[in-house]
Length: 295
Ligand SMILES: [Zn+2]
Image 1: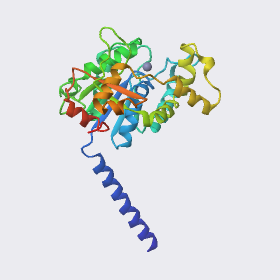
Image 2: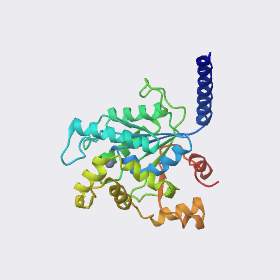
Image 3: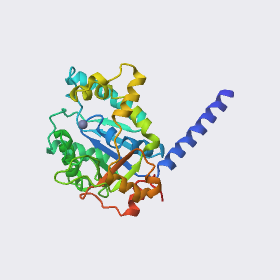
Image 4: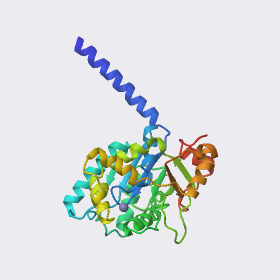
């Protein structure tokens, strides 16, 4: 009898939890961020992803390549396996689902095969918002990821393209991550998000990409000797290394969304540009898309 009572109680709370999860998720927007490598979305929008995840939103990161070229001593399947495990750990720390597509790192091309992979990912996630790099960048994989996602815009709503995955009912809003490239046009921060309160958590999640943060990027950047050996020291060092000054144009965008007084106090921010090929949100709709912005 006691066991039966316990079972009924467990079942009751389980049902409550499922109903609660459903009602929390119901009507909430779904976001997908697409980068070239397993650590790109993390740097571009990790803080914003943490805030969304804390608010109960469904966020997915996708890496279009498996990262099997990004190391000075490892390569191929062994490196891809290590980077997949790092991405899963980072995903846990961000509170997002982390997918890695099996395309070779450093060899990405904007062909039909990969475009269809990207369309499928956006449709399966039933995304309302898609964030990706602009096609202006020093790294060809980043540039082509930008092209691939632009090529997926609109097509995600065309049922006769990739018909095995049901098309979206409407074209999502497509956004670009912030970058520093000036040609052919500089990044325009249409939306800017204050991530000061979650910056430490963003760094902690990025710390999961050990092969990149403490090995490959310092090696290719010629600062390997700066990396502390101690695990705790490393994370502190990473927070300083990855600290980015807010640019004047992003500061102006913060002023628009948060007001001048609040904007002046913001230490860390992430910004996004609206892509012309997706749905075009009004300022009011941007506040709905980014509900952490003050009303
Ligand atoms: Zn990258």
